[in-house]
Amino acid sequence: NHFGLELDPKNVYSGDQAVTKSDNLKRLHARFNAAHYWFVDDSIGNIRELKAEFSERREGFELRVALGTWGYLGPTDTKDAERDGIEMVSQADVISRLKEELP
Image (tube, rainbow, N blue to C red; front, top):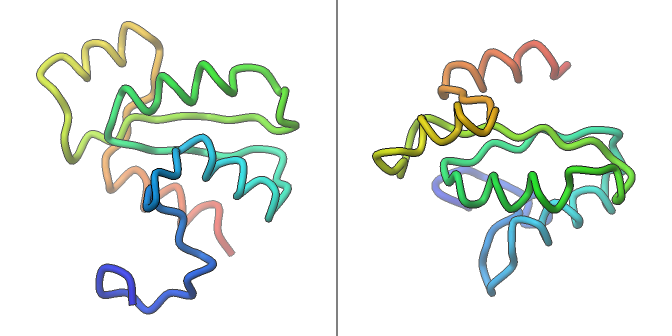
Protein backbone atom coordinates (compact mmCIF):
# COMPACT_ATOMS: atom_id res chain seq x y z
CA ASN A 1 0.00 0.00 0.00
CA HIS A 2 1.62 3.26 -1.17
CA PHE A 3 -0.31 6.50 -0.63
CA GLY A 4 -3.52 4.48 -0.48
CA LEU A 5 -2.81 2.58 -3.70
CA GLU A 6 -2.21 -1.14 -3.90
CA LEU A 7 1.15 -1.34 -5.68
CA ASP A 8 3.84 -3.92 -6.00
CA PRO A 9 6.88 -2.40 -4.22
CA LYS A 10 9.07 -3.14 -7.26
CA ASN A 11 6.94 -0.60 -9.17
CA VAL A 12 7.57 2.25 -6.72
CA TYR A 13 10.57 4.48 -7.48
CA SER A 14 10.91 7.02 -4.71
CA GLY A 15 13.51 9.22 -3.09
CA ASP A 16 13.56 7.08 0.03
CA GLN A 17 17.01 6.36 1.43
CA ALA A 18 18.50 9.33 -0.48
CA VAL A 19 17.90 7.80 -3.93
CA THR A 20 18.07 10.60 -6.52
CA LYS A 21 15.78 11.17 -9.51
CA SER A 22 18.75 10.37 -11.72
CA ASP A 23 19.37 7.08 -9.91
CA ASN A 24 15.71 6.12 -10.25
CA LEU A 25 15.71 6.96 -13.95
CA LYS A 26 18.75 4.74 -14.46
CA ARG A 27 16.99 1.94 -12.52
CA LEU A 28 13.90 2.33 -14.70
CA HIS A 29 16.01 2.14 -17.83
CA ALA A 30 17.86 -0.94 -16.57
CA ARG A 31 14.50 -2.61 -15.96
CA PHE A 32 12.57 -1.56 -19.07
CA ASN A 33 15.27 -0.60 -21.61
CA ALA A 34 12.94 1.83 -23.41
CA ALA A 35 14.14 4.12 -26.21
CA HIS A 36 12.62 7.17 -24.57
CA TYR A 37 11.16 8.37 -21.28
CA TRP A 38 8.98 11.29 -20.30
CA PHE A 39 9.83 12.66 -16.86
CA VAL A 40 7.40 15.05 -15.18
CA ASP A 41 8.27 16.77 -11.91
CA ASP A 42 7.00 19.81 -10.04
CA SER A 43 10.55 20.91 -9.18
CA ILE A 44 12.32 22.96 -11.82
CA GLY A 45 15.59 22.15 -10.05
CA ASN A 46 15.04 18.42 -10.57
CA ILE A 47 14.07 19.02 -14.20
CA ARG A 48 17.20 21.08 -14.84
CA GLU A 49 19.45 18.45 -13.27
CA LEU A 50 17.94 15.63 -15.32
CA LYS A 51 17.97 17.70 -18.50
CA ALA A 52 21.66 18.49 -18.00
CA GLU A 53 22.66 14.94 -17.07
CA PHE A 54 20.70 13.18 -19.81
CA SER A 55 20.89 15.81 -22.58
CA GLU A 56 22.81 13.44 -24.79
CA ARG A 57 21.97 9.80 -25.43
CA ARG A 58 24.90 8.67 -23.26
CA GLU A 59 22.64 6.33 -21.34
CA GLY A 60 21.15 4.88 -24.53
CA PHE A 61 17.77 6.60 -24.39
CA GLU A 62 16.07 9.90 -25.12
CA LEU A 63 14.68 11.86 -22.18
CA ARG A 64 11.89 14.41 -22.46
CA VAL A 65 11.23 16.47 -19.37
CA ALA A 66 8.24 18.55 -18.32
CA LEU A 67 7.44 20.77 -15.38
CA GLY A 68 4.21 19.79 -13.64
CA THR A 69 2.27 22.98 -12.95
CA TRP A 70 0.83 21.62 -9.71
CA GLY A 71 2.55 21.20 -6.38
CA TYR A 72 5.39 23.28 -5.06
CA LEU A 73 6.22 25.75 -7.81
CA GLY A 74 8.12 28.86 -6.82
CA PRO A 75 7.06 32.34 -7.89
CA THR A 76 9.38 32.42 -10.94
CA ASP A 77 9.36 28.73 -11.91
CA THR A 78 6.94 29.00 -14.83
CA LYS A 79 8.78 32.02 -16.28
CA ASP A 80 12.11 30.21 -15.83
CA ALA A 81 10.71 27.10 -17.52
CA GLU A 82 9.50 29.15 -20.49
CA ARG A 83 12.89 30.86 -20.77
CA ASP A 84 14.72 27.51 -20.60
CA GLY A 85 12.42 25.84 -23.15
CA ILE A 86 11.00 23.38 -20.61
CA GLU A 87 7.54 22.04 -21.43
CA MET A 88 4.89 22.71 -18.77
CA VAL A 89 1.99 20.33 -18.18
CA SER A 90 -1.08 20.16 -15.97
CA GLN A 91 -2.38 17.00 -14.32
CA ALA A 92 -5.05 16.86 -17.04
CA ASP A 93 -2.30 17.01 -19.71
CA VAL A 94 -0.51 14.05 -18.10
CA ILE A 95 -3.71 12.00 -17.82
CA SER A 96 -4.58 12.73 -21.45
CA ARG A 97 -1.12 11.76 -22.68
CA LEU A 98 -1.14 8.54 -20.68
CA LYS A 99 -4.52 7.59 -22.13
CA GLU A 100 -3.12 8.16 -25.64
CA GLU A 101 0.07 6.16 -25.11
CA LEU A 102 -0.96 3.31 -22.84
CA PRO A 103 -2.82 0.27 -24.13
